[in-house]
Length: 339
Image 1 (cartoon, rainbow, N blue to C red):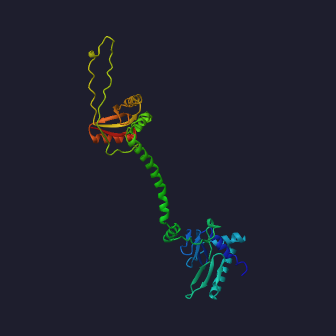
Image 2: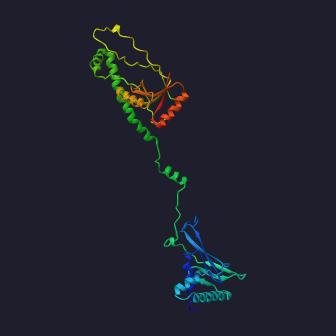
């Protein structure tokens, strides 16, 4: 019928913007969203889509389709309603006659064995505007070699080994041994027959050999590392120099005896080690200005002057204070246990 060929096109236009479009007296078209899909066997990739399903129970006129037809045709609502009714009657007559009715861009209808409507959605239809221009495609499967095949290639690519190359590798070593043993044997024979020659040679070149000694330093410690076992050492405090006024007339025997060294507490929290004593004293002054009982507690094995921020008598108190010092003052602080 003239004027009805565009009703199905109007339905497909509305499906891009609405989730449900009802054709009065016929049924409702619903859209369902589905995300991007990958077929594991066919290796096909499909973009996200909104596909169409049909519900014959939705036949009540909601005015959406008729209003859209009236706007597109520039006709009244009543005229558009009559046009939609005629289109519905035309579709039902064709279905009852055994014909298949196709809705453009949507799908086709046919009458089932039990006189029910059977809807076949159109393949490739997608009513999701965001997926416009994203077609489906098939990617060939990625062929990967098995682990067994890769091992076979590696083993087959290795050259065959023989005993002859091994014998050749021994020749440089034999030459090296011969080059050392011959001079040693010659020196031995010379000393055996004329000992004075090697004695004179030793006296002439003894001053050319440098003499030196090595000292082992304290093992490095990472900043902030928790010292679970701490460090144990035998420690002797060097008392500070007594400050007193001396005159040339005073004799050393008249000087008062130095005060006894202060007793250090067993658990000391060390916060620094300095190569110069002056820097260590400056750091002690800064800590004492912050009301810490800081002090210099001697030198480490490599000659660095250690600075303690506090000393305690019990291990539990020392560990508790150490955690506070690491969190608030110095993350590199560590615990020194004096025997």
